[in-house]
Length: 244
Image 1 (cartoon, helix red, strand yellow):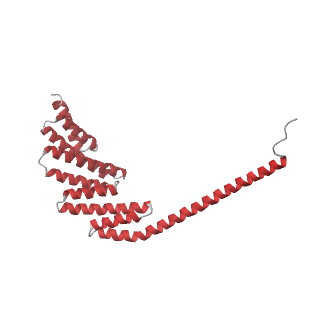
Image 2 (cartoon, rainbow, N blue to C red):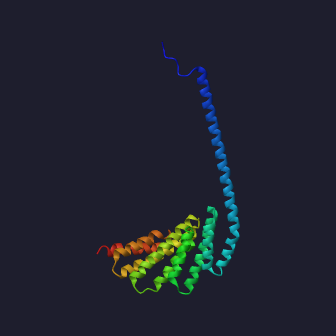
Image 3 (cartoon, rainbow, N blue to C red):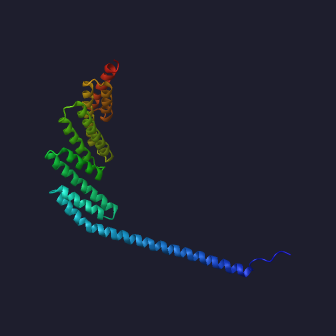
């Protein structure tokens, strides 16, 4: 005869009812726990927003302070960033801190502290990397430095750095929809690289000069005078210097 079943029909029914009750209870507990966590997260978010709204008044004070003492304002803004709780407020603080860094950099540049000014301008770029204005600050600074150098090799190196900053400023401006501004920045980068190419040629470095002219040609906007100058210089170098 077949072995008797391990569980009677009534026992099976009871076991199924128990399992079903357990699953329903577990689902209910999961939903309840999720709801509690959601409410807790919402509440913490509201607290963070209220906390940052209270800090907003201090942000306004720091921005006003930057007009009188940018370095001091930068420190206040750094403290605010550490105390901020929302990403949105952190971004606001960093943009304001970038403005303070730029102001301090310009102040130092006026008194001849070029290296210190460069560090503050670089900090402005770090705080607000999508703002092309801070790249142009660095570009102008390096151009100023290049004018005071006697060594052509050092001057070329600094001018190349300046041109790179102007080119980045052009790319950032284009992303912001500022087409005409982007073209002017790109053309200025091309002008600097034209000067670099001429300097290379003067030192007999024809291939390096050709690469500088190629950079200028690629950077300049279509139809611009500097693009045509770069094309002519590149054609001249390729047809004479490299052929020798």
